[in-house]
View 1 (cartoon, rainbow, N blue to C red):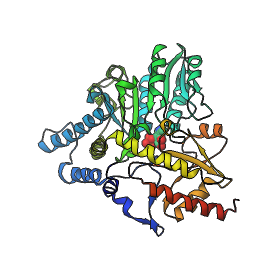
View 2: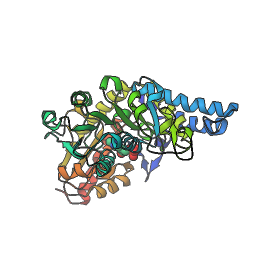
View 3: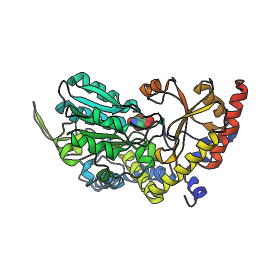
View 4: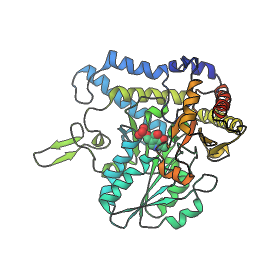
Length: 409
Ligand code: PLP
């Protein structure tokens, strides 16, 4: 990051104090702060362009439609899609994965089929598949982790056979930070005829993504985790799969023709966007990927790898602190989850808040993973392009204060 201090100035929220200290925002894995470019784009949309999209014969509606569809093209380019038609706007990662589960899985899975996930998945990449299993009689299976918190590729061969129809894999863990070998898993899945669905909620904000190079079939992400607004995300799917898929939601906008008893669907992606879409949010999403592209995703990754390495080094100085996640920076992103002696993570988060530091505590929507880790909850500091080494340093006295308050030797 060549000029980080200038970049921080793009984020108005980061300029404030919290509990009498400069705000140190270390919760970007939950949601990210928004640059002025995103706020301005959404503001300008409502002030100058607001109209419903697709149906209007008048100029304003056409301009709004161009902005909405323009954002689709930006998101498509950001993930390396072959065409903007491969991008479905959804409410976020969760609804994107549900769209695949109920639009594809419901029509392709039979009793006895299997869905292979990994042991570190977020609930968004577990529960939709559990629901699908209930409806179809398919079963879930999990690829285990290695002792250093990576997925165990040696177990891939014995987990994959022609009964596996879907492999659901996170690109990057929101708890452990682990970067998963998506391309290798997708190649193995393809060899047995399974599709690969990537939960890229953490990957898309933090790593360059190229769906063609990954060789996957679907990829889901959330705008709010990549500098954009809440309420919108994207499902990328290979066009031939999207075209063959049924919509999980029906209503206006997504039809070709509606009769009294039957209807036919619009082509993808509009088939999956029933009702008035989140137009201002799409505009904000487009501005967010413009911002990230201007910084450069390689640069984002380089900065975060530096910060994460530094954080792991500094946290190793804290007696009683255990980090859960790969020790090598090349295998992990900037979500650093930890426990400190027997201090409850919620207490840790409250003590850090008094010092102006925002971290998250809990199971981070990954209860099965926490059960495997043997802890009900962890504290998590997570970094993004606007964080600094000085903010990592701020953790140390705050954690020392927690140890003092709880009498940890
Ligand atoms: N997957 C991962 C890895 C996540 O970190 C999250 C959010 O925390 C999600 C899925 C769900 O994203 P959303 O709540 O935006 O749908």
